[in-house]
Image (cartoon, rainbow, N blue to C red; front, side, top):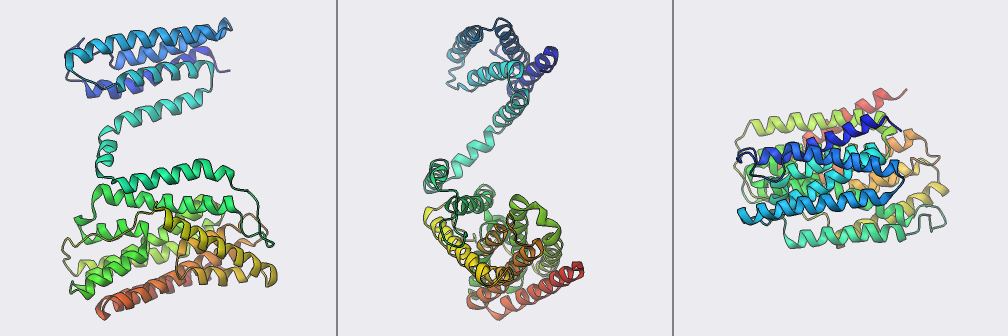
Length: 416
């Protein structure tokens, strides 16, 4: 165990950190007019540590329980008097005080690393009041309902799913399929929330980039429709090119989370292609002056039905890929990833990466990931041709061809 004095110091530091946030919000209040500020929260954390130390020394957990009860009654009584005077019904400071006391006890008698992390997380949550309230105001009920349903399915359904392959080729693992589906949706949801918070009407570029975190193909189709409706095609092609770079960034994030050992193989080609998309896309945007534009119609990535469709496609691709590898060999993974990358790059990339834990050579997995990204870029061009005009899809197609050529050149230069 660490020296008691250091643990007591951590308990005090946790209280001071939370008290700094609480005191800053009430810094303009007259002295002595508030129940708890930076000093009180600091002492509360230290008191929790002292009570935990006494409880541990006497080998009697009732001591800490009695101390927590007494602290709760004292803090609640003073806060009640303050609330009656100010006509304030917030209980945040009381709950924060109880957390500080408990974390102080944990720092002394338990896992001090967890206590330090808990104190930092508590201070961060308290400091994010405006952000969280703004999020609640902007989120709609269908979005919240979808997220809650998915959370329940993940927390309850995921542990119940069998964690072993149920097909003859070892490709379809229900728990693994659902976990990777949730991972993909979570990455998308981060962009979706950013779009809802920032608003995509602040400009064509912001709209395209934020929407591309959810689906770059949806952005390409949406911009193509704008071009067909008469809006300037060149800036739309530039914004779509920037969105394509975001799709490559999504692939890198997925690789980083699931198979970081493959980054050395896939990061240079993807980053070089992404830089081409960014550079030429910026050039197209710089030569025009796009208006604010309309919102990109990006679906909520936590909707249940699209998630089930994604999981179904991923399951079918994983099963077919495992069967093909068993019958044909490892090189069939590249073809499977390329074929599935036409309709969804995430499905293709996840199918390839799930082979990283087996006997599949890393070079083959990396090539499969890059093939999926390449074919998906071709799919976006096809969508642009169907939805937009020649003034839209020609620049986008040329930028995509240059990016593909640079990425492929980088990949072949890396090969021994």
